[in-house]
Amino acid sequence: MPDLPPGFLMDLATPEDIPALIWADLGANALFAPTGLIQPEALEQHVPETVLAEEIHHKNVIVIRREDQSPVGFAMVTRRHQGLYLDQLSVHPDYGRRGLGRHLVLRVVHETEARHLPHVTLSTFRDLPWNGPFYASLGFVEINRKRYEPFMFAIEDAQRDYMDVTSRCFMRRPVRTSIFRRRGI
Image (cartoon, rainbow, N blue to C red; front, top):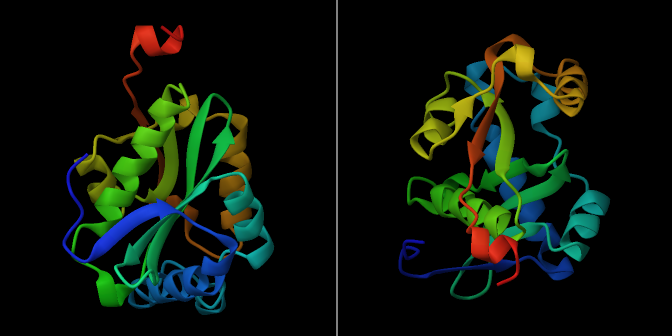
């Protein structure tokens, strides 16, 4: 994995990070306000504290920190079907355009491989430059709707109440897992 920009560290989140993760999530949400793709009241929502705490406990939240240990962004994953699902990627806009989101996604790919899972899946806005095209630049490919898994339809149904799901898609990136690692050799 490439080195992080100077002044930043990446590791697993801790319960003490939750207030800063919420701050980063709300900041990242604000980027969507001018697009009109998400209802304004939904932009004021964040990943609930209880969900963050649960996923931190399961080592499913990766955080980017400044050298002073202050979190500025995070990726949260869960196991869905046969792979990892990138539930949330948030970098506070004050720290945007430095490659931090890219580093978080690459760490998720690495984590997927370390867990011996075949792929990472996510849902995103198809055409927003910092969404679909960003993930495509990291090797993610849009999944044909005919190949959606049941959990994808459930996510889409949940999102329908507060965003334009017609402009969203699911994307997947396979990971290479060594045959020797898979067998524990």
